[in-house]
Length: 203
Image (cartoon, rainbow, N blue to C red; front, side):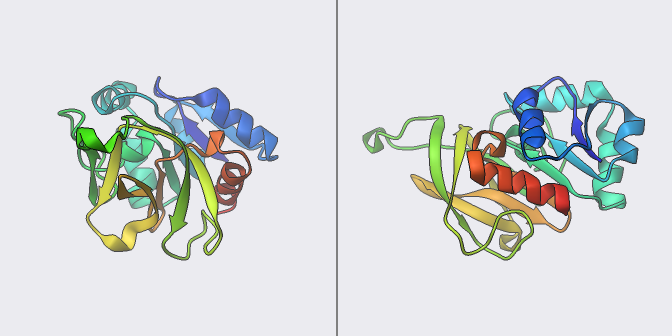
């Protein structure tokens, strides 16, 4: 079973609809500790600010069970967009500590005015897969949909799964053992996103 975490933040409808579309039926949208403990995988969605996301997780009381799931039991966890950023240690966006499941931090895009690059970064971007993995097919050209003003910087290059370019090259997906994150939205990325979520369901 895949537990999609309910902590009051996230584009849940699109995620659940995508799982349904690709035929993954054993999916549970839940904020219950017992459901999470019984799950095989976790998906942590998220839309909005870093501090609000961490505050919502703290109020939910789910942080200890998430830590046990990912760091002790070492079951697969996938963070999407803000969910990816919350897996890092901190963010330029706020003051709260992140979950710290991966050695990295979340930084703000900052461009000179003459660049004409708008923030947030919004739209379709090509993604370059940097290593063999079980989430995104290696050696193929993939395009994904992004909406974000912040990006993750991995402190361990070995954790970088894929990169994209928007003014700078940035990490758009990471993997450290059982811990995965995507800055792009697979649930909004048509056939490419379908493949990512299907692959995650099979890990």
